[in-house]
Image (cartoon, rainbow, N blue to C red; front, side, top):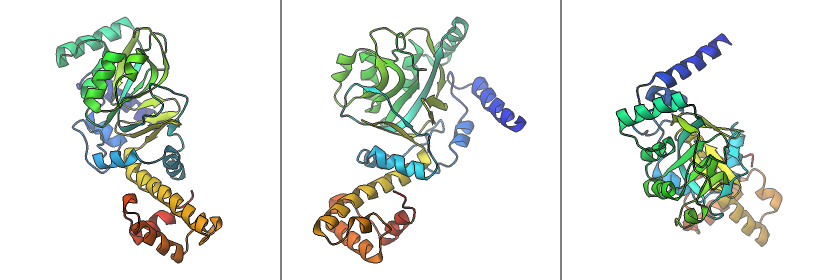
Amino acid sequence: MRHKNKILFFIFFSFCCTNSFAQTIPKEELIFLTSEWKGERFADGRPKIPDDLLQRAKKIGIDDAWTVLKNEGYTNQFEGNWKMVKNNVPVIGRAVTAMFMPSRPDVEKAIKNRGTTQQGRKGNTNAWPIETLTKGDVYVADGFGKIGGGTLMGSTLGNSIFSKSGNGVIFNGAARDLQELQNIDGFNAFVRDFHPSFLEDMVLMGLNTPIRIGNVMVLPGDLVIAQGEGVLFVPAHMAEQVISTAEFVARKDVFGFEMVKSKKYTTGQIDSQWTDEIKTDFLKWLDQHPELGKMTRAELDKVMSKRTW
């Protein structure tokens, strides 16, 4: 217990004493928390999932992705019960995290003064994370579920977010200006509710720090997959495995349907571990459908070896 408390104290101490902008954690701490990620990183240490993986992620189903994570022991990655600006526009990208708390005058004054003098920041702190966004990012904010006075975004900030990221937002809080937000082509927001009020009595206390969205711990750089069912947060180091497996499951389903329909194989054969004959037929079938992508026998054997879906 003492060891655990020391770790928590170190994280809190590092969080509070960093000289970086406002409430960011040290780069070394972010790298430590995402140490299983071995790829490229942004300057602040945030994992940078490649753009091509983001594009592939737009074509997979959230159910298949969730199953892959669950089978690997990641059981707290999905959060539902959202309201959306648009029902048919998914939000896929890398998480930029922001943690808000109920304001208190002394803390908010100190944070805004530091942001103004050290970084030239202006306006309310809910706009500050927007300045860090790059293409492919998703602004993910924990607004502690506040609705009235908890509107982290209106139409002006919505347009700014989309112009910088080409993406939408996930807010455990509220948004305003619903009709105007609906006019931003390609934009979507997953929020707890919409409300006509302006933001008040809230202050940014963490930027690109670990945050909680419902029952999920979200880390900077996580892959966000937000679709009609809800929002799935995929750890960056799991992104390629999740995407590749979900892609295979989609191909397998189409192949299986054709095989069952033609009566070459039964449903039981398709839904069990495949024989060499089925694997050979699948790879031949895949060659006849180049739009579904390529796969080697070694890749097929690997994905089938962990089959629990």
